[in-house]
Amino acid sequence: MQHRLNGGEAPDCCKKMSLSMIRWLFTLVLLDSGNLIQATVDQCWTPWFDRDNPSGSGDFETLPKLLKENPEKICKRPIEIEVQTASGAIVSSTGDVIHVTNVHRGFVCRNRDQPGNSRCEDYKVRFLCPVEFCNPKECWTPWFDRDNPSGTGDHETLVNLHKENPGKICDYPINIEVQTISGASVGSTGDVIHTADASTGFACRNHDQPHNRLCADYKVRFLCPLEFCEPEECKTPWYDRDNPSGTGDFEILEKLYLEHPKEICSFPLNIEVQTVAGNTVASTGDAIAVADVTTGFICKNADQKSGHCSDYKVRFVCPIAFCKEKECWTPWFDRDNPSGTGDYETLADLLKENPGKVCEHPIEIEVKTKSGASVGTTGDVIHTSNAHTGFICRNRDQLHDGLCADYQVRFLCPVEFCKAKECKTPWYDRDNPSGTGDFEILEKLYIEHPNEICQFPLDIEVQTVTGNTLASTGDAISIVDATTGFICKNVDQKTGRCSDYKVRFTCPIDFCKKMNIHVK
Image (cartoon, rainbow, N blue to C red; front, side):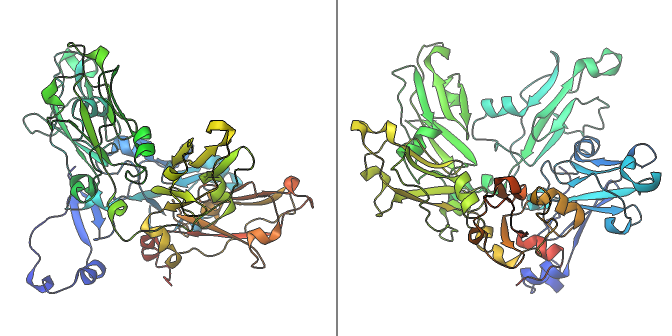
């Protein structure tokens, strides 16, 4: 990637200034192939892109095409999108009916949607990327050259590189950089490139090249989250739960969660593998079936020439927040009792029943009995216990036809979730329940209130328009989450009609600063 801030010494005028002063007083501007990338210390905006004109079926500034047409200039998973007309006017000033505007798909205005057979305006878009995408303090992997173009082409694919280089590449890279093995740029080769992105990796196919020539020989490297390069601050202990005396060595993450509760984060950034003697995987010559942060590690005896895997141990790299003392834990929840089929403290139900009190994507879960005892002391067989699903203990799994203990759970959330009260949108009431119900849909709120709501809200709050709590109404709610918004259907109510609701969203602090929203 070539969008980088210079890392040189600050000029004398700035040496005595605090970081916060620099953050607010200066914008660093990078020049790259005629495009300006604006990056503050906190933010990383791409250049403006205007790839389409509305002379056809409309103006289609879609992210997949922009990524393909502008390699290395847009991150794969943007945080925010900004849209203006080509002349710099805001979208709402045009009166156009907008079909799509979000960071997943980009921006689409269709001519057929406009009143009076009018055309869409000509629009431009830019994207807010993770700071690492622009930040001079970067985390790049080594260069990899796993393939030569003497066969069908040069295939430096991420899935193969992960398998062949366990622990050296993060599972979800932010960006990819490609050069020839001599260090020349891709553009200088004239090759037709099939794939070059951080999700798939790189592929140049010989049959795509003109005049039956071969692809150049390429090498790749990946940009990873900073935590991946500075993992020493937050690593789990080493685990060796299995020996290869059976069918192989299976260090499965799901089983490690159960055997070592609260020791491993639910979304590890990386996995490290060694033999129990401390040797590298490569030194063993073993064929490894799986080594990733989703499954864990698997070596099968049947795949080895010797017929037997080495004995391995694993450990995981977790987000810094998992190890830090400054944590953001939810209250304890006890939504179910084991008098029925068991104790079901599921995240989906807790989110629905406790809007605003649990983040959508927790980092970790903690479980104890209602009396405060640990899970291990109960002797219960636990069906599920993780931050994705929540906690489930089924009565039918217990010995001697016994009941599960009564459990309570709490979740570790991103720190922003606990500080989120500082950045909230206005209240919105876009619908009344006079029709089929009250539908406060986030996608429609984006269109009706452009730039007022972040693309990935941390939380949603719901009240009646008179300010009463959701629980006080007794209504049966279909949906209440920060992805879809809020839905209450009249047909689900005993009275035949929902109350009239309003919603607001919690956004990251940076969103409020960017949009000049007052921070309480």
